[in-house]
Image (cartoon, rainbow, N blue to C red):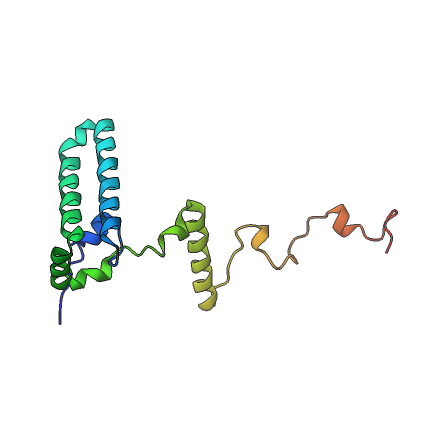
Length: 150
């Protein structure tokens, strides 16, 4: 039996880079995060101490991963954390909140359908059976009246 400390962030996840990121990508991610933190410090001076601590953590992660020998040692000593690294392939999929909601709704619908639970259509766009729709509409329901030619 073994135990993995879930609350521990890998240095890769701190920087938001993949475990196979090149040193230049690591430095670029570190610089971008530091720039964002500095901007946040200007806007929210009350959180200054917390933001400085985050900046130190980001700098330390960048230094560790940008240097090949230190990175190799880190990877060897923290192999268990690679399971929790950021996966770049999934990130663009949910750039828009509406895409995330649509994907979640689709996954829930598929799960309920597989379980045999009847689904309630969210809108007429999702419906396939209109037998219970008794609202009359002249274009659909007045087939035999004047002006209509078959």
